[in-house]
Image (cartoon, rainbow, N blue to C red; front, side):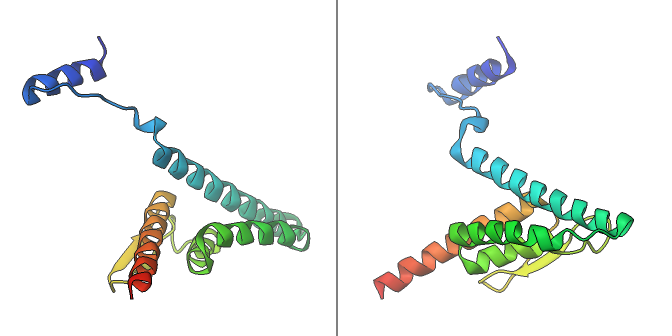
Length: 142
């Protein structure tokens, strides 16, 4: 038996019911979050390479890369809409304040969200998507 089986057996004994455990890595939400994080990391790494090349050699590749980045930005807008795509772009292209990225965003309910990691960004983006869906549903009912 492995740990998962031990926990399953323990829970079944406590709950007096049969349960099924799923690996979170198999869930569509986990895969979507992982892909989002990979995409943002890759875009940031490419942007940093371009900046580093310019700083060390004076070679500016932005003229060549702008079209590629525009395609990426357009795909973000297509997937998330203009407002959320802008939130993602601000995180990607912002210069870090200190050692880590720290950006504060306001939520539709007026509270402030600190986005320090790409995972935080994903969670915030998903909140915005949920709010937009809710607003569309509310508008349709009106």
